[in-house]
Image (cartoon, rainbow, N blue to C red; front, top):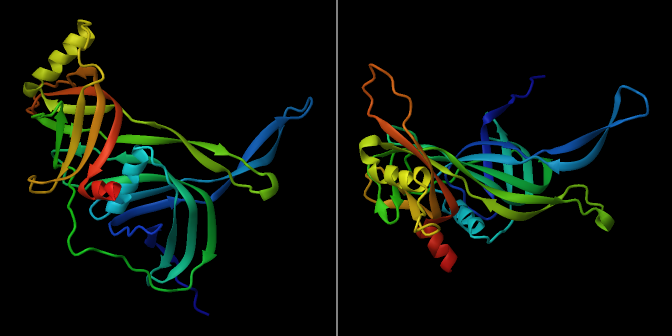
Length: 311
């Protein structure tokens, strides 16, 4: 009897609720039930006794090329505005012939983290955003062998890691060469409700959202305004008269750099640090300055997200 062909790690299908996720899903992992273990001492014994305690579903990590996934961006926009909602979805694992063999359905999922990659003027990569999803339940079952297929729009927005602008207080900053990767985190509190429902897996409720600092690199000959701001506020201890009122934005552009595709608006922006990276003799690279900004909160904005929120 001929042995069945193994499943392929490159053949899978990912759906999220009724969202049509038509972009390139680079990878999917996680989403299995895990038992937590406690160890306890027993009298004078030097060894500890271990036993299982609570259960939880491990987070699902999804990497998506952000070219055709406006519904996902709307979900991000909602969560960042405090409009929390749970989504459910399915991961279908297939064999080498693209026939579905195993279904992994995740239920009542929170958007726990969103990680944007580094934006670099020298990069040739497309932007791939990493989502960390926290489901409250998961169902495993064999699939029926149907062929999986992707969905692609005829026209889609190209999002390059090299095409971006950085705006501070309404003015485009010249000489910005890099914005380091950053992650927005949604706090979740597990509630082991148990009781008459005999529910073994915890329910999660959202708490606070943590917006990260930004690390930005700029050509040193363009750093005058940032350096003066750093000297006034941090070195000389002057009161920032616009404290709490500085705003900014990261604009993601198309390849021609003549259209803004998406914007992350920044609020309550302040200067945190400034430095000149390592200098080496014999190097002919352009001298750079690196500064850190703290951000009170962010707002994800796109034409599609605005239409969705206003509907």
